[in-house]
Image (cartoon, rainbow, N blue to C red; front, side):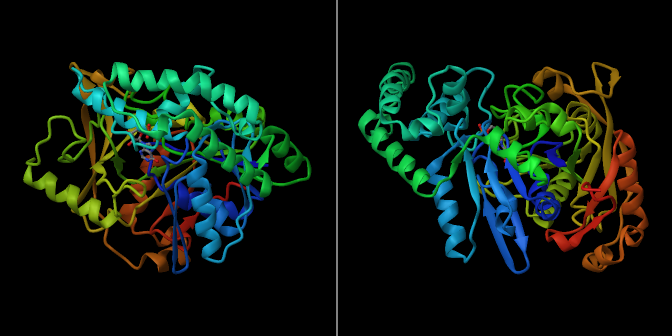
Length: 456
Ligand code: IMP
């Protein structure tokens, strides 16, 4: 049995909370794409854990696997492992031998290229997390990357670095005119990689991911696939070029872990949606309220007063600041074309609608049912980011709902939700062909109303 959890918006939908909750039914939690650009917050009682690379389930003692489709910054991996151990946990972790390694020069190139893109006509900068994710995937697709299995093989490692580093260094120096440091030095990288390789061996962390998961599944273990980022950040299905460099959508749970697609589709695919919308970084966002300087194109800090107030209220109530980078998130109304796109792309069986408490006490809550583009109504997300930027939302307005004792609501169940909140949630779920899995009414897992457990 498998459950796959996918973000249906621009990331930060609260997948960590859903994985934490449903991770209880899993023996293994697998990340299948991305790297330490993700940021999940897991609240366990009084303790809050913030993780960028390890899957959320790790804090509950579930085996955490970083799949072949990920790019792994081993410095971050070891920091997260050490941090959890210092807090008294005994994390069980496995890393795919076929996963690619994020090297220090990838981070440098990320920053260098983002700066150049920001200066280019048309501003191509995606506002990346600066973790080297794009450059690492570039090396992977360019068939010159270093993989986890290479860290144990000094000869291959040296040959690979000797080929790739001078090219990347020339790119930094000659194309971008950047000054480089030891992040581009073959010897220094070789030593760092060997140290990582020795520690992977000492702790017996590296596995053949597909074979490992096959063994676990044959032994009857339940596997949860944890998507990072969100559908609209998918390199193929998102708002390209304002996307990440991997596929957060459910198909990648198979390719990024080494199981067949039927393993994923025979299980349950659950989309996570926030009751409103947030985005970190640049790119189009038709339902955005006001804006955030440096991220919203053309925004100079002075928008419509009412929108500014609403955006601030939601941002503060929802704690909408990047876990990873601390950046304030751009905030807007829920967007159904985005949600339909996500449901179709990943084939959602169920939907978790979260952050319903954050919207409490607003006079009205709005949802974009469709867009108007060049005078025509459309219910789908246009392929071109420029076209999406020109879309005008067609809104439906709902009455607000009161702020209530949300933990008590969670305890009493779905019928205890305020009427307005229930009407809103049902409207959203009806808009996509999925069942309601759960409603999130607070950050802790006990503040979630489970309607239909995806494990059955
Ligand atoms: P990268 O993944 O660091 O290359 O960043 C590419 C785009 O994806 C940027 O707009 C980032 O802000 C966004 N992004 C990457 N990871 C996350 C995430 O976990 N949550 C939200 N946005 C993300």
